[in-house]
Image (cartoon, rainbow, N blue to C red; front, side, top):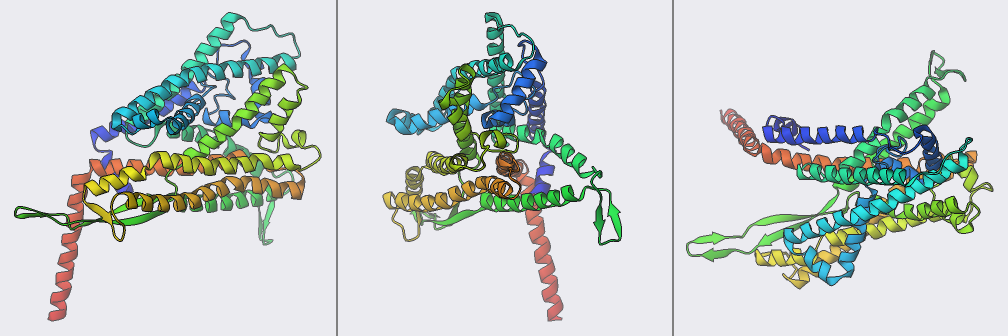
Length: 495
């Protein structure tokens, strides 16, 4: 990363404007997360929301990607999950229906049509999810309220649904506005802001626990005592080391790539010669980025939502109880309720399903974004070829073979990283009888690292474009200084 170039690029008015637009959109996003939904008694519904988050991984996931919108019971309670679901459906249909696949391959016009259909499908999905959320929360309020709570009227239902759908559409629009600035993907940036927004509360809780010296202080080699809780200190130190290690591993995974050398044949046109040069074709190890994790978590959360809907209608439903028990990630708050007899075979279904879905979505999304046949055709038209590989179909088969191998290792690596929190939970269950509840934090860490690297890469690329002339001047200046120093050394040695 050229951090000096990034800071220098902010002197450019257009670049500074793009940066300020993104910052402003993030402020608007955080402001929307605190606008309450016009639905009944806010405090009563917030209690129901906390119960939903503690009892279901779906509620925790929605709360994470909505930036606390679920906890605050705000108008962006639905968040961008309808857009994520719509993207999954449209991309699956694109692969399944040949006519849609032809449209998606029709350059920029085709991509605009696909994006427009994704936006259109987002609206009915947002309506369905809004109705489901209000129904679940209302049933929880009716079941847990100590006082008599009146049923919601048709007008209250209508206003709440309109507000939630409008909030989801506004987030979709804000995300696309951020994408248009050319500094990273807007939807991913909103998810990053959602996760980071909860860090101050987490750090404050850690600090409160660390400075609680009611159980004693930490002695350093008997020389003096630090005013910190010894147990919390060592646990925090272990977590910090583990987080740094995982971040380093994830950074290496995201930056890893296979470099292919492309040769261009020499062409003679009149008195001029073209080609006879070399370039590179970088193939990333994880070309799909963070998308498989988002898709897998969102897709796996749907059965828990269905189970919650069934249980709100019939609390004794065996199907609803099974769906919630199987597709809810175990954590410290729900483990005792879901698994009163300890670890059972149901505990392993969610981690295994998450691992399989991450691998599947990695392959699927890579096949959508990286069309080997199109790349091979473009190389052949430009007179480029890979040494030892015949242009055309053979090049496409060769690229397909390499991409499959890269996807295998990349998908398994993403899956293993996603499994680390569950492995930690399993160890805690064996040691102390309850998990540490870090499953969602592990997913959040994975999203933070991957999205941050993608945005930094996009920002670095945009900064290089803005400061290209200055960058070239600085490079030439360094080369001249280097040649001058070298000539002085040669003259000194000659004398």
